[in-house]
Amino acid sequence: MEPMNMTDQLRLTKAEQEALRKKSIEINNVLMKNGHRLLDDPKLLHKILEKSIPYARVTADGEVWIESDR
Image (tube, rainbow, N blue to C red; front, top):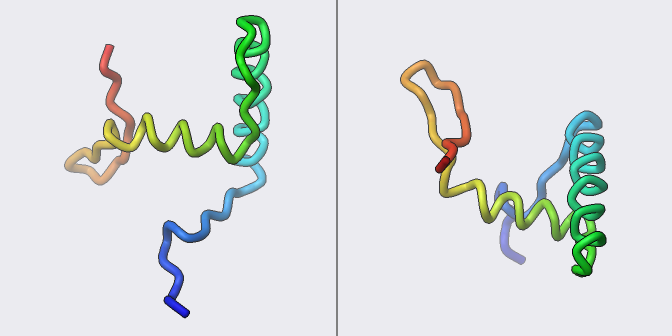
């Protein structure tokens, strides 16, 4: 059996879980209004990571942030 690495498991804090739940409701309401299939929380989190990881940056001070392409 291979050892686990950081990508095998991700634990969310209660605050992160609540933020994900609220964002899930917000996004699923838009999807539903536009006739699209709803996303469950794990699938939504994967989509958010997939879309945001390329924009992750770090400042000289060590602050991590997401660069906007707008």
